[in-house]
Image (cartoon, rainbow, N blue to C red; front, side, top):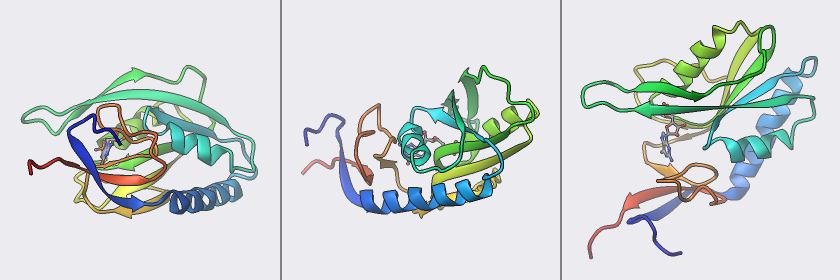
Length: 181
Ligand code: 5GP
């Protein structure tokens, strides 16, 4: 593959078939838990779109989808703040919400989204994250549907990017800086 970023893919952490199996399992669980209701799946652009596209095609329940976009800033001293770039336009009051996230790292993004959506008085909010990084989190986020627990590496693929690249990889891989040989 042409190296466009100065970084290289080292190990494949999770294969395409492992992802497919896990997404099927999550879709079965969610379809069972929500068989008497019509949930709204909320996905954060852009990383979550591939996960969303695969998961909803495996669901057996009626549902709708919505998108949100956020930007996170990491100040020199601050722990980071989130700015909302795009919000859900439709009413969510009284509705069951499932937030679909690609990866949980510090927890800042999901904590922000959860609180932001809660303010709009949905009936319920649950969180489904495909990847959960094994790190000490100062922000405690409860994940209701978990995919894979992964070590603390920077990963790409299956929607996750580095500078916009690698989202198309069918697997999850570790990305590291290229060393001068
Ligand atoms: P958090 O707010 O939990 O620290 O991070 C959530 C967001 O940070 C994710 O939605 C993702 O955009 C980005 N992120 C965190 N860890 C990784 C990673 O290992 N790889 C990539 N590509 N993005 C990550």
